[in-house]
Length: 126
Image 1 (cartoon, one colour):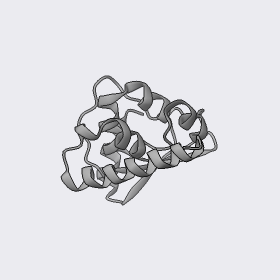
Image 2 (cartoon, rainbow, N blue to C red):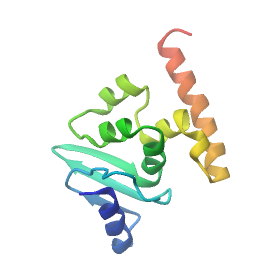
Image 3 (tube, rainbow, N blue to C red):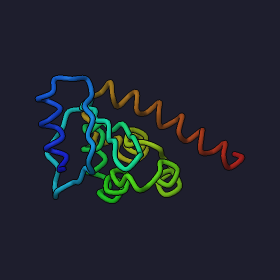
Image 4 (cartoon, helix red, strand yellow):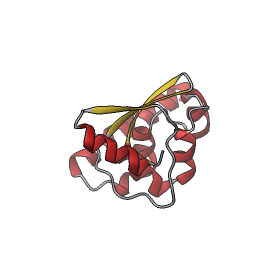
């Protein structure tokens, strides 16, 4: 299922979060999706909550990250080993802060970035 189709289902469902039981894929350039559009991916025994708005922003910075993050064959630990983050939100905080338009979200992401850097430094004894 394309991400845009998942967004359409989210709007039709009028729920806080919808569940998707098939792989999501990015088809070329994504159309803008508002932050807060949450879907629960439930595929092949793995469950992952994804904010499509933050995924849209992450896609501007790294299509490879988005492809890997949506690949439910990869664990979050494998995502962390490759990118140093566990979620699309963390990825945006570390790599795409300039792409965030909402000033409140940008400030919160800046604090999250500081937390992530501290967490990762502790793992390396710094």
